[in-house]
Amino acid sequence: MPRIQFPRNFVFGSATAAHQVEGDNVHNDWWAHEHAPDTNAIEPSGIACDHYRRFREDFQLLRELGHPAHRLSLEWSRIEPAPGEIDRSVIEHYRRVLGTLRDYDIEPWVTIHHFTSPRWFIERGGFTTEDNLDALVRHTELLAREFSDLVSHWCTINEPNVVAELGYRFGYFPPRLLDAELAARVLTNFFRLHARMAEVLHEHARTSPQIGITLAVQAHEPLRLESEADRALAARRDAETNGVMFEALRTGVFSYPGKEPVPIPGLREASTFVGVQYYSRVRYDGESGGPALPDFNRILSHMGWEVYPEGFGPLLERAGATGLPVVVTENGLAHDDDRVRVRFIADHLAEVDRVRRQGVDVRGYFYWSAMDNFEWNFGYGPKFGLIEVDRKTLERKPRASAYFFRDVIQQRGFDDELVQHWSG
Ligand code: BGC
Image (cartoon, rainbow, N blue to C red):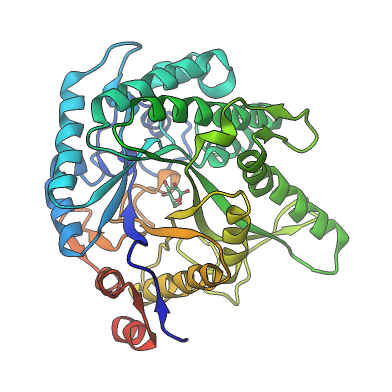
C-alpha cells in the first residue's frame, strides 16, 4: 500500500453515545426494553462504563491519544425525565463535560438523538406522528440555548434508518414492532425533524455551526450475481435505505420506494455535512426473500459482520453526490484480536483516501468507539473500543490499535510499516 496522507484540516476522533457509556440511564425507552420480561436484550446496560462520573479520566486518555475531536451524545431522558421538566443539574453536568473537552482542546461533536428517547415521549407515540415532533425540536432549542457557546458541531439524529427499521419494521429494537408502513413513516418523520432541528441550531449558533444527520449505510449486494431475484432484492434494500436518504438530502424530497414523494421544507438547506457510518455489507437471497449468511471466507467481526472495506468507497462517493461535504462519523470493528482492528482502520482509511483523491470531499473520520461499551441488544460481549474496559473493575486500558490511531493522527497518515508495527 502506498503512503496514505490526509490534509492538516482533516478531522480525526472517536465516538460514543450516552446510553452506551454513561450508565444508569433509567428514564429512557432502552432501559425499559432491557428490563422488560420478554426482552431480547442479552443483558441490561446497568452502570455501562460509568462514564457519567468518569468522563474526565476518559477525556484525559483521549487527549493522551492525540484525539483532536470527540463525538458524544447528550441524553435527552436525563435532561427532561418528565414532559417539560428540565433537570438543571444535568445541564450543569453536560456543561462540565463539554467544558472539559474544550479545556483539553478536543472539539466536541454533539449528537442530539442517538437511539434513546425519554419513556414519556415513546408512550405518547414517539416518532410515529408528526404532532409529536415538536418535543424534540423544543429539546434541540434548549440544547442550542444552553450549549452553543461550547458546541459548534452538531449531529441531529443518529442512524434514523436503524431506529425506524430495527424498531418498527423488524421488531429487534424497542418498540419491537413489525410494521413496514409505520417504519417508512418514522423514517420520513426523522428527516422532517432533521430539517426543523437544523433550523433551530442555525438560529441560536454563535458562530457558523456544522450540522449533519448521521446515516447508517451498508453495502447491499446480491448473493449470486447471476440471480435476478437476488439482484432485485439487494437493489430494493439499497433504495429503501441508502438511496432514499441520500436522495432526500440532495433534493429536499423524501421519496420512499412505492410511496408518494414528500417535499420537506428546509431539508435542502439544513445540513452543512452528511455523516456516513459504515461497518459492513449484507448479501441478499432472493429465494428466501431476506439476507443471506455472511461470506465465511472473509474475516467476520464479533457481530457476525463481514470485514468489507471495498464496499465503503462507493458509498462515500454516493454520499458526496448529495453535494454535501462528507464526514465518516462512525466506522469500527468488534473483534477480540486487536491486530485485526489495526488493519480494519488502515484498510478503511485507505478507501477514504482513494475517494478523496478522486474528488470526494471527505473531511473527517471518527472511529467507533472510543471504548468498549454497551452494544445494545448484544450487551457487553462485542468489543469495539480503542480503549479496553475491564467489566469487573471498569479500568481503562488503550489497545495497540489506539496507539496506531494516535500515530495516524499525529502523522496525518500512515504507511505499511506503521500498520506492521502495530499489527505485527
Ligand atoms: C450505532 C452505534 C453502535 C454501532 C455498532 C451504530 O449502528 O450508531 O450505537 O454501537 O453502530 O453496532
